Length: 319
Image 1 (cartoon, rainbow, N blue to C red):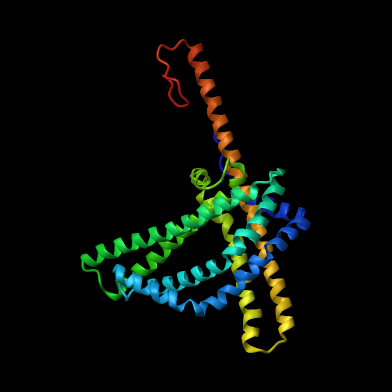
Image 2 (cartoon, rainbow, N blue to C red):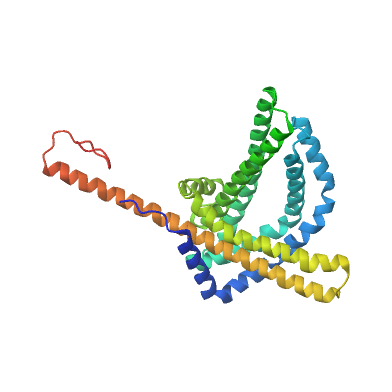
């Protein structure tokens, strides 16, 4: 009999328990990831204004591709993409080093394996993940362009239609991007168990997620909300005070470092949650395979004991 997927709340409780149980090591991993979290938090407000040139180029590209200027969704999306692209390029050296070293440390701790090539497998998978996220964005844009072209050819050009199309496009884009990030995170924590990491790990993650997407999204929600909350806290407490000049620079820097460290702790917790989710997926797959083998052997024995003339071997076929 097939075992159902473990409840997300149980995986989350086990992850939090393990995180608190090994808190001294989790703080070490957070200290390793601190340069990345600091660079990420600093890059977002600074690049929100300096990414205007990229935003203009993306808008020009969208207009050239045939997207209507009446679709406000694509204006917002191009602005967000330009900020994300600028921030990602700025933090790339930190993510390829400090972030991956932190994740490798946590995965090695949880798996009780001291393989020294963890980092290189994570690095290959992380690079493939980056191209995968870019492909997901490109696919979403291609889908929206095709839908916009078809609907325009049928004469759907009213303002209400554009609002409805923008809302539906935003929902579809969020679903595509959420699934892409879930696959990327699962591939990253499973890469040390593979032979070399890379695109094969992505394919393995896609197979493991079949029928488990809702569980993965439910697990990703709490940590992502925590990360978003820390980002908002950094903007309010640090960047707002810095621009207003109502506090001493030293106190702002100390508070900013503490907030960045809190962000790094959430990154560590996210790695722990993804690791236990991966373990749950693997255990579920193994138990389903064992259950299928047991069902096969039982049916073969029944078939032989009853001297049935026609017996088709298989887990579900018995005559």
